[in-house]
Length: 431
Image (cartoon, rainbow, N blue to C red; front, side):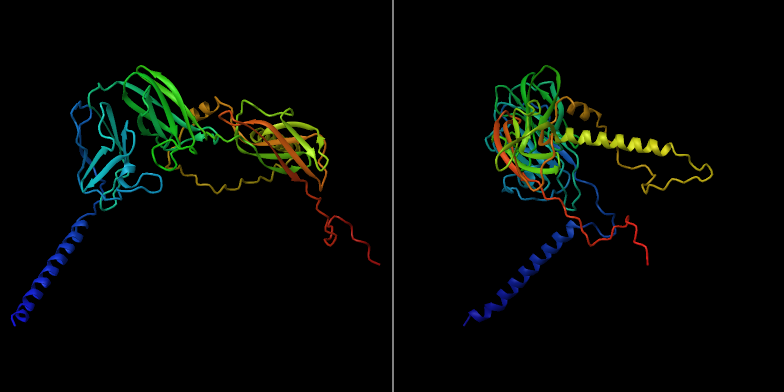
């Protein structure tokens, strides 16, 4: 008989508990927003301290690296991976030299970092990359570098340079850079900037292999299908290197398609870029008329870039001759034609111009790889006829050679539409 008397008291306790939880939730939600009437918070988070400090020698250090911000950092997924790449806060941390994964943990305004393999007797380099945000999405767009040692002396040497895309003839943005001291197998990491340039300071003098990788999957490793390049350098105080990244395809190259361009021109697309120092000529390439495989005489073999350059030069010459012919005609000196507006803004652009002269000079040091060849034949190709292009000994950028044959058909000539009236013909006289 006593149980019914206790039910109202229990219901009152539950109600008070719900009110307390709701009040705490409302307070938490209210604490994230800006104070009423105050200016909005647009300042990005700042790093107050990093422990160990840069330059510290801590032989017995076995704790986590601690990065302390001045406010709470937005929590991201830190326990897993997105596909093969890094997930969450791991993307904003570069700790090297480390073999394997780096544990990055979130503690509101504090981030802790530690290699999964544990600490070794090395000089470590921690780089905090842009990307941390506070709860109002204000982004930390700066970076910070800290070096500390668990025994060895911190060096004074520097390796800098630029990462380029050899095939595309451009800079490699945000390239993953690794400087591996020989004979070690793991090195110091950094990221190239938006101009492809990088610097790694405070290295020990010695021999290094420097890698630049197009880290497309963001896993901080050189993938089999990712373009990269390497160079060995001996550094005493400072050294600069240029890296020409390209895909290291271990499969031999082969012709993929052949296309009819005009009556004497054929374009062949290869499965991968070819070594520009080992050009193909009539000893490596044949054009055959099918079905009896009759040889077709070849005038020359060009890369697509060479063909485009010759075409552009011929077009420029024709335009120049046409302009000279127009200038030779007397003009009406009374009638002056005003230039038409170009439609482009005359105001100067706020975007700073990037000086690409260094990039052009570096790219000009090496011949350009190509995956397209243009073949010109001596006699015109026959309409409605099938041809085969046979390539022997094509060499890719790592020295693999391959053979192959592709075919194409010359289209029939387009018949003239007799239903259309020829405007140039004189109409017959009316009777």
